[in-house]
Amino acid sequence: MSNNTDWQQRTCLLIGEEAMKRMTEARVILFGVGGVGSWCAESLIRSGIRQLTIVDSDCVATTNLNRQLMATCDTIGRPKVEVMKERLLSINPKAEITAIEDIYTEETAYRFLLSDYDYIIDAIDSLRDKALLIRRATASSARLFSSMGAALKMNPTRIRVAEFWKVTGDPLARALRNIFKKEKQFPARKFQCVYSDELLQNKEKMELDENQFHKVHANGTVAHITAIFGLTLAGLVVQDIYTSVSPST
Picture 1 (cartoon, helix red, strand yellow):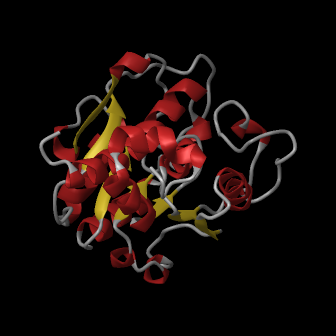
Picture 2 (tube, helix red, strand yellow):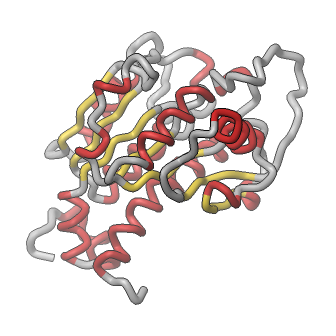
């Protein structure tokens, strides 16, 4: 463990020097640093990922305080990626964090060279943009991990990981599959998703455009669910790196 700093020793004890080296070399891009993505970003950096690009166009709002890692009374009104970058660098000052205040859409997709990355993590809410990212990401050389809907969930024991076409009980996954089938444009290859088959109802009335899934704050969400989703996404990246070095594990 001589090549690792003190704070990485516990991780290195478990996964070994070679996996730690690959973690520092891996290039990861994360779309969305909200309720799911913020926890994912921090877990990646704490696990040893050093090259991370975070993408989000929103600013911290009061409604984010109940579930988003970087949301505090002091950060309200500031760009999420800016606050998140500061926090990540306070954990590992040597990390290479690229913060992009933008959103992935048909109009902006050309700005993101997805094949420049080893891993793409999808933690965005907009249905149309999510479908586009999934198509483009699976057509790239990068490995994609995607979050399905984390709203209207309460039971942490119902959170699962499955290949996209095997996800059950999740309205967002169902809506994505409908888009792919209707437009006859499908993901280029299989990819793993974090999801829950639980679906509760809001206790209060609120309007929601079912065709957009645009903002998770339109539905009730709680921190322990969004955090588990995000930590699991990060875990999938770490596990993939670990098994690439220890394939029999």
